[in-house]
Image (cartoon, rainbow, N blue to C red):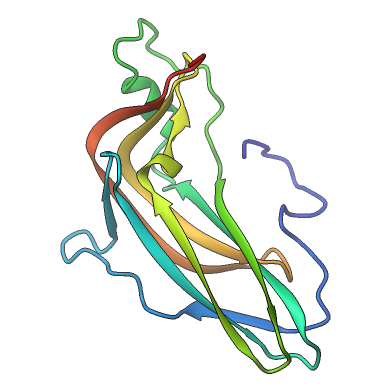
Length: 175
């Protein structure tokens, strides 16, 4: 989540004897104005991704898809979370900016030449980050959701997500 060096293997890398492809079964609904999936910081704000995987190989196998989110390049979620913490006296967060965070994963057995569908739910709570007091806070801003397959570190299926509504503490540290 925070490591900035070059990993030997990316998280989620794996071995497969098949060739996989993935696409959205139903394209995500993007907002007409923002051009992104629109969520709010309110509890219950969510969207669902329907990912269809196809086994283009000669063997049946298990395909694992991992869902991640990350902040847009021009946004630091740790700073945004610290700003929304309800009155911290510190003006500078002591948190390393988040690079990406896994929000879901699932796998399915698919016969050679077959297709299967996986559903992933993203809630506003999945986008929460810790502020300097350790509280999990979801804040408004621009994010990117993407999926990776177990066959390698190639990123699949990117979609922008915009969160509005200020900030909300999802979980207080120590509670």
